[in-house]
Image 1: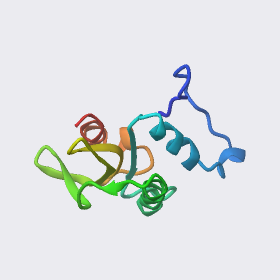
Image 2 (image 1 turned 60 degrees about the horizontal axis):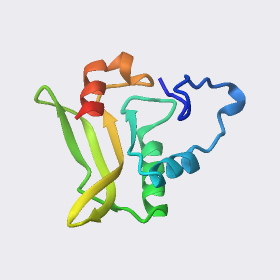
Image 3 (image 1 turned 30 degrees about the vertical axis):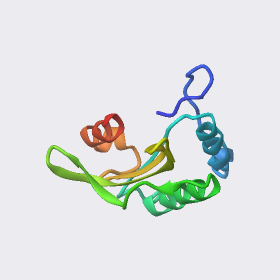
Length: 125
C-alpha cells in the first residue's frame, strides 16, 4: 500500500489519476534526503519492470547520481529473489544510496500478495 507523505493516510487512485507523473514527487523526496525504493514484479503486466527501470534511470540522471554497483541479483532464502541496482553519490569516501530499483522474481502487480516473503526481504534488507 502506498502512503501519503504527510499524515500516513492511504492514497487512493482513480482512472483520472492514471496519467499523473510521479517522477517530480520522487525527486523531491530524494532531495529531502529520503531514500526511495522503486520495485516491480517481473510478471507485472500493468507496469512492466522495464518502465520502472526507465523511471529510476531518469531520476538518477536528473539528480546526477551514479550507479553504485552493477545491475545484480538479490537473494531470498538462497534463491534469486530478483535484480537490483542502487544510485547515489560518494560522500566522505563512502557511497550514499538514495534511490534503489529492484525487481521481484515471479511477482505480479501486487508484490505483497503474490510474493510476500520476497517483498519483505527486498524492503527490509
